[in-house]
Length: 335
Image (tube, rainbow, N blue to C red):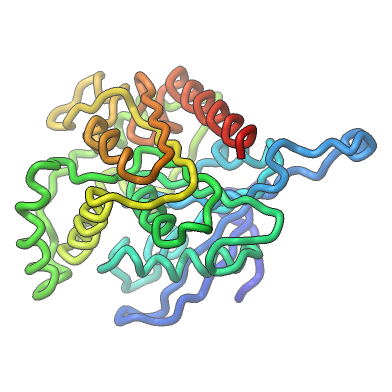
């Protein structure tokens, strides 16, 4: 394992390359980014004050056609004493290598290898446990689906699961069962065939329209293109298989918090309305699917939020952080 080095985000962020062996496209790696809580001041040491989340490790996983870049989200956790880690999965962002198919995976369970390597680098066992420390899983969109499935397969690992607009159901839910056999057949015979999709870049434009100069975000367009990466038959089959597992019901033992926009609008044409809705997922379907994750699920609907609620317009973004803090405070009070 290589050493921690300065990350492209600068400031307190560092990264570690996780070697995952080879596949048919060559060497495979994942990348773990970390931000640690600030050292206590002399006054805090004198008073023996313990930060609110001093015994918490957070593991964040990004969504499709994405990578980790949200400094403020990391600092929400580190300012409260938690150790924050973000995983750029294989063939995404920092982990994408020349000659690789961006984002491609044929089975979401393959990410168990990435997650296990990250947990080991965090000082935790492969099942996620670490004496005296809690594990919070934090996933966005496809990362929310990946972590939900992982948490269900590893019921004793996570102490809390927080999902930011998780992709728990296909955008046209009623047709998922109908198209799944066709997609499975295509995935078997030609997994790298490109599936049809139309992305006019409106979601990226909406984020740019609501950008806040007081809370700046810098994005690498090579790692997070304005129009999403190509969708392949093998990858789509993996996603639909994950959706079916959610529909059949998961068994996440930890309490779950799901943050969603209040409304969805399909991005068929540009309008100002797209700056205050989820234009990627059908949030009502996601809210219903979330109730199948486990026995303790809280759904937070945020008016005016985008697909990534933490990249929304100022008012909705601040509300998302308030809801997150309220839920985390309640989790710590009862945990």
